[in-house]
Length: 85
Image (cartoon, rainbow, N blue to C red):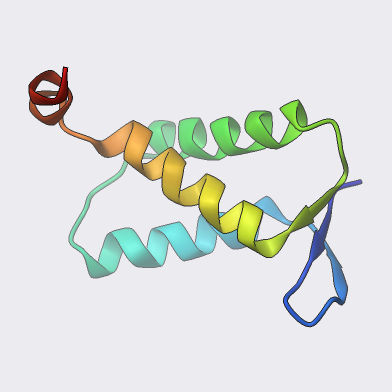
């Protein structure tokens, strides 16, 4: 079972649905339309990246960084990537 270590050092059971909820709010507030298939891919990617860490305890900052990096991976326009090459 995955556990989140919060900023006040309390523990909470990891719930991917919380990330789902926050992302949906963020997408709505920024007028980004995302279909269910793409949302599933984002959340699945996040879960798989957590699984790669070989631990069940994650600091909230690690989760936040992972979500931010995942959004950059999935939403960086290809033109930006091409210009950085």
